[in-house]
Length: 271
Image 1 (cartoon, rainbow, N blue to C red):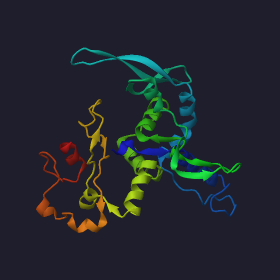
Image 2: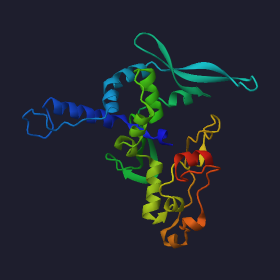
Image 3: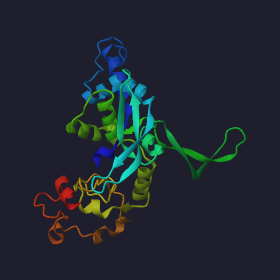
Image 4: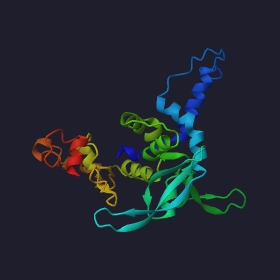
C-alpha cells in the first residue's frame, strides 16, 4: 500500500536547507551575486517537515512504552498491550501509533537510527591486519520513516495534519520512491541479472493495489491495506508463453465491481 512507503527525512532536510541558502544568496547557481536565482518553490509538506523536525526529535527523546489494556468488544476479553507515549514541551503526554503486544514492537516503530547487517556472502579485508571479514551493509538508513508514522508524528506532536492528497504526493516523491532496501535490491538484481520477469505485472502493468498479504490481526484486508509479497517469476525467454490476450483471459477478479478492473476500487472489492 502506498502508505507503507518510506520517506528519507535527511534528503528533505538537506533540500530545504540548500534552498534557503539560495534565497539568502549563499549558494544557488554559483555566481555568488546573492540574487538567489538557484532557489525553487518547494512542496509545502517539505517546508513543514523542516520547520518541525527538531520538535519531533525532542518529543521522541522522551518516548516510553506504557502498559495498556484493550478489550474485545464482541466477547469482552481483555488483553495486556503496550503503546508508545511522548511528553511535549508543555508537559502534555501524547500517545503514538497503535497498541502492540510487546515493548520492543511498540518502540521499534520509532527507532530511526541506521540499521545494519553483515553479509556473509560479501567479504572484505580489514585495513590493519588484512583479516577477511563479512561486509557490513545498511538495512535501513538513518531517519527513513514510513509515511503513516511520519504523518502521525506531524499530527500529534507538531499539530500539522496532512490530508490524503498531500500523503499521496509524498508517497510518489523522489524521497519516498528512491529509498533503498536490501530486499528490493535483491529482487531487482534477480530480475535484471538473471533475465527474469514478473508475469502478473507484464500482463497487468497498470493494475493498482493487487496485494497478497494483509495484517489480519487489525483486519487490514477489509480496507485492502496490504502488500504484494508473493511473486511468480519466469525466464524472459518464456514471455511468449504468457497469455496477454485480455479479451480471451477476461477481467481481473473484482467481485461484483463493474468499473475499471485495474483500479484501486476494483482491488478493494477483490480483497
